[in-house]
Image 1 (cartoon, one colour):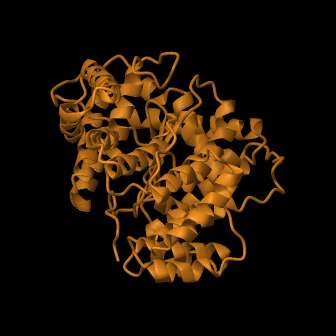
Image 2: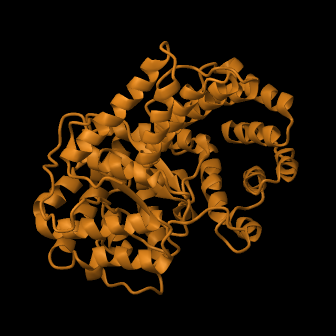
Length: 470
């Protein structure tokens, strides 16, 4: 069973890849990417570049769509971000289903985590170590500094990496896509790699300090490097051909620092186990035998019952999913959401609504469950504009259903256009918006006008940054 297309199928230990594409292959000058006060402003060229590829990657079929996982990741980041000097403490997140073990950031505060890396990350401290390392790259302006260090060579490299992303998004085979990635890496060998390895060690050390300042266990980063070292056993260890130091040398570097005791050392947080189980379950869909893969990866427990329920739900077998959900002895945000979705898929709407309402009785403004409530009851969702894409996607879907249900097709098209635009499908979004403009009522025209104005602002900013028009 392969429910999702992977970005590529080759294992990689590259933890950070800056992925940008520009319109003209002969164009050797990059836009001025000096930081502005707000890292997430359209006046910041770094954000414009990063947001462009963020939208492109969110159009991939590999995107993991399970909102409680994003809620958990947002909360985890909130413990680290206050320790940084970033003006904007918001990090946009995308979880990608892939047989690669990877995580990376791109300019403008965007973070990507691949599902396969959660095989190595087995506890919350290790995840904090990964997040601290990635956030450090953003805080230290490594993309901008790399650009300044080797402008012309990096420009060539970015074109190749951008081509690799485009190939992956277009469904190119793993070998073709991997060749483009490796081509981009090989292009850095003359001089740039040494600088990159220095950045990695700087991010390691800076990230460890975040963990100490946040009262989190910095040894999680050491455990992460240890897991990377084990995963790299038996593979060529040619450090000069990698943009990262060897995991063993990074582990030794982190061990040279005095271990700190975490104030959260004795606190149990089972939500991590469910976050990990969610990503591992999606990763299982890429395996030849997903159920066997899952049984070997997650020990029998409430967590494994949740994982098998999610796998059966993704396999469109809600009756079997409910069998595992009924075995749960404890419930949380992950299990409640999956239960509500599964009951809905099994046409048990009243039971799904009861689960949803029980959550909203305690947290009436909960975006995940309030949008699900709107879909179940065919009512209009809350009007709040949410900062995170995964939250806005929930609202847009709920509004599309509502307006289509009351035969207000122009507004349904308006929110469909927003969804398409957020996935980098700009031409499709523009066509939908033009259809909405033709038939929209006078009282609703402002909604469509605001959407068009936003599209225009983004396109103008991308034009100024000389970014390829997809």
